[in-house]
Amino acid sequence: MNRYPQSDIDAVYRAIRERRDMRHFKPDPVDPALLQRLLEAAHCAPSVGFMQPWRFIRIRNAELRQQLHALVEEERVQTARALGEREDAFMKLKVEGVLDCGEVLVAALMDGRERHVFGRRTLPEMDLASVACAIQNMWLAARAEGLGLGWVSIFDPGKLAALLAMPEGARPVAILCLGHVEAFYPKPMLELEHWASRRQLNDLVSDDRWPEGS
Image 1 (tube, rainbow, N blue to C red):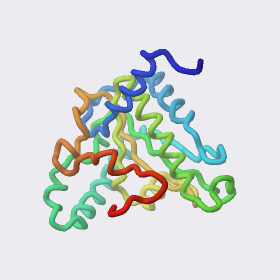
Image 2 (cartoon, rainbow, N blue to C red):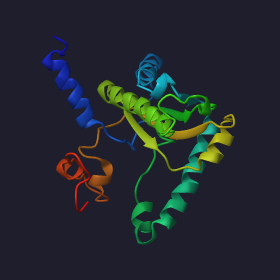
Image 3 (tube, one colour):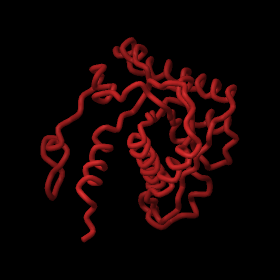
């Protein structure tokens, strides 16, 4: 009774399967109505205690976008150094599309989260999980609409919060690059670049207790 038509089910699984963390974009603008639909999809996400902790800042100023890119580049160099023997390989990767994409959004956690105890008394990080659900909603909707989205986490959160005049207690979670693409990667980009490969599902699922030897 509650099951969707098979074509709708297939479309949901297709979007999940073909979603990609995109880094290569065309500069074409994103239709405002489409952007609104994607934000509404994000806002439909589940959240612990229905606190809806997500905040989205649309970066429209060109100079501000350049400043965001500078923050990412600064942290990219620091990350490379921290990787030791993989530094050179990392520096060859394209890890963001901040200057290339049609839209840049910053997803952030709200301030005053200490007031929200429901579902967070022992797991306060559930607010972050809620924001991640909102981003995933947007990601899947973007894929269905034919737009690419890339989640950039290479930045200093304190510096980004200051740049965007966030109140005390608020915290940026992601820089989201959104826009038109020539094509979606056939596999995750880091898999194509031989940085890592997807693990087998059976290695990550167990019954009743933590699996031995893992």
